Image (cartoon, rainbow over all chains, first blue to last red; front, side, top):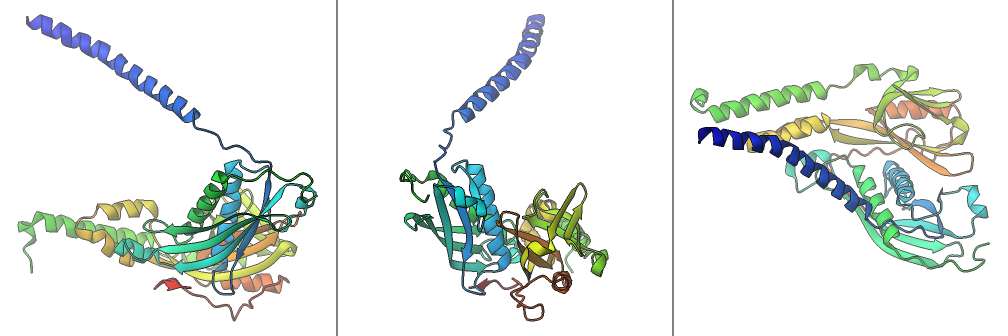
Length: 186
Length: 181
C-alpha cells in the first residue's frame, strides 16, 4: 500500500513538472498571439509639423515648454500615425503636400513639488494644461481639444510634460482625420 | 524616556529611520567636484540631445566650437552658431532615486514621509534652444548643481550666443512651495 503511494507521488512529480512547464509555455505563446492581434494604428496620408507651446511671457518655464515639445515629437513618431513628423521651422515641409500643423496654447500651469508629493501624497501635483489645435496648411482646423499632463505621486516635476505628450499623441492617434483635399497646400 | 527593549516594534522603527536618514545623507551629498568652472560641469542630460540617452550623467563643457556633453559611451555637441536661446531655472527633487523611494515606502508608521522631508536637493536647469541644418527647432534640457547653469550661460554669452533674457535679470523660481501660474 505504502509503495503504491510512493509510486503515485513519484509519477505525479515526474509528470507534473514537465506539464507545468508546458502550461507556462502555452500561456506565453497565447499571450504573444493575443498581443499580436492588437489592432495596429492606420497610417494617415498626413504629415505633421509640431509647433512649441504658445504662452505669455513668464507663464511657462522654458524647460517645461521644451520638454513638452521634445517629448511630443518622440511620441508622435512612435504612434506611426503620420507619414512624417516635422519640427517647427523645418524647411523640408515646403515640399510636403498634405501637412497638418499642431499648435498648442497654454491654458494652465501649476508647478508642484516632489517633496510635497512624497510627504503628503495628495498635494504638490504638477499640472500642465494646453489647448490643442490641429490645422491644415491653409488654416482650417481639423481637431481641437484641451489636454492635461499631471504628475501626482511619483516622479520629478518635468514628468508632467511626458504625460502631456503621451496624452496628445494618443488623442491624435485616435482621431479620425479627414482625407486631404486634392492639390491641397501645394 | 520610553523603554525600548520592552517595545521591539518601536526599536525596529527607530533603527530603520536612522538607517534611512544615513542613506539619505549619503545620497544627498552634493558633488563638490562639480564646481569646476570652465573645465566642465557635472550635469545630467534630461532630454533633447541627438544620440544621447535620457537622464545620462556626464560633463558639460563650453568650448569655442560649441557646447559639449560627454558621458561614458555617449557624446553630443551643439554648435554655437545654431543656438537660438539659453535659459536657466531652479528646481528641486528628491534624492536617492527609485531605490530610496522603495525603501521609504517600506518604513512603517509613515516614517518614509519624514525621511522625504530631508532627502531633497535644489538644482539648476539649463535649457538650450537650437536649430538643426534644416531649420528644425530642438530643445535640450540639462540639470546640474546649484549655481552652475548661470556660469555656463555667461560663458555662452561671452562666445556670442544670443539670449532673450540677460544673465543677471533672469528670474529663477525654485519650486519649494509650488506656484500656480
